[in-house]
Amino acid sequence: MKIGDKAPELLGKDEEGREVRLSDFKGKKLVLYFYPKDMTSGCTSEACSFRDHHDELAQAGYAVVGVSVDDAQKHQKFKEKHSLNFPLIADVDKQLVEQFGVWQEKSMYGRKYMGTVRTTFVIDENGLIEQIIGPKQIKTKIHAEQVLGGQGK
Image (cartoon, rainbow, N blue to C red; front, top):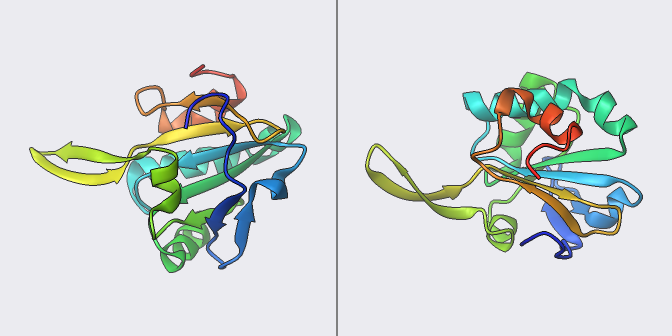
């Protein structure tokens, strides 16, 4: 996916098993952020940044949805533990991460593996990708502020 591409209508299922569709956010910009794993420090900081700036994001016309390949049960625990106030898509079949091109080979301590590359897509009111904030630009502790400030363009 690149800037100007149309985002898919069906995004996946959230932690409650409900379908999340692009049309659910009609009239809003959607911050669709992909993150590697629930309950890790960077991912928790990022989620809490979106939680803490929920009101400012809503006033600016944004809705937020997080996506990882963790299952719904793990997402529920993550949401409860950190009082997250937005849906988390459980992309266990890796359909969305692959569609958006964020499922890539990673390397840690010389070991190569496949995983989600932290990336945020801002989708406009017409369902088009307006902005992509890549892993080198994302600062997890202030990521919501980056979105609000239009950084990463």
